Image 1 (cartoon, rainbow, N blue to C red):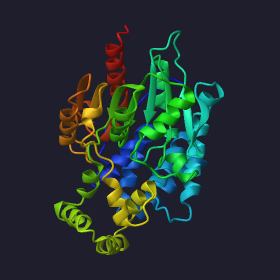
Image 2 (cartoon, helix red, strand yellow):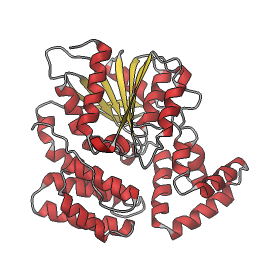
Image 3 (cartoon, rainbow, N blue to C red):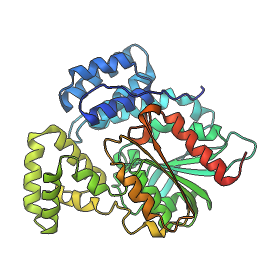
Image 4 (cartoon, helix red, strand yellow):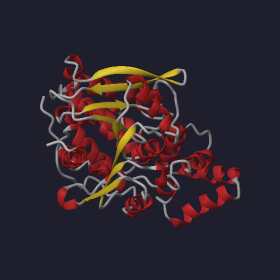
Length: 387
């Protein structure tokens, strides 16, 4: 099948995060806009969200629409709490159906699967070879806090068709590595990257980081010389700030003071109370604790401090392309400029802010993925001198 990316952003819900995720699944799953819009009208909170999309998943599956069913299940998996008895079952269903939809790419060896040894366990990795007589170069793609490799199959095929050998791996805290291998995330992303480069004998790569990968990829480049170029598909200058500032300055100040004074029991009690009263807070904190391998809310917030580019910019000497959206609901556009100003020793720095007029204003530009990928490959062509 020919890879085509839908274009457009829609208003599905007044809550920015619900609305963003609904747009995300609509793009990747080719979901009918009117159906998602009607579901959005029925959603008041997380329980409604999961119930509505589960109904849509079962209806689409019964109707034989594999792609839509897969991404409706993925929508449920995203917001389903980890203590829900059906959590892993829904994850397995989403993954298996997405794989089934894209099965021809695996059967025809367009995507080749591997397992990379890592600290006594394994990281799943995919390789999509260049579909040109001569490869234009090697790309290493890394996800962020919550994406799955299965939903990114079209991205791998895009780069493969464009003439690049592309590798993707799920590192600690991501996808299968988290769910099946039970390995939590590390802010020292150079470690899993080194394992992947060693395994595939790669010595000159362009790394692309999606979402939180906007920290993970530059972080790896700061300590890994085999990375020659860096592309951030979204910016993440300071993950702690992004997380704790989402509910207002008062809560941000409270968390900062509690951590500074080392009053973890008080912080745990207050956040725990909030989690019991608010399903969205419960999901956000519980999800973060699970990904980072934290046993308490205080430990989770402390671990977030590690995910910051502060003090790392001077260690990056590669060519860098930074991309972000003008209306990112998650990461302030100011972080784009903070990231850029910190790259004082980079070989070159190019920046691109996508706008609403081109449907690229959202986090990771899911309203116009095709344009985003074109900007990346055009930048690589210019950097590498290809025509």
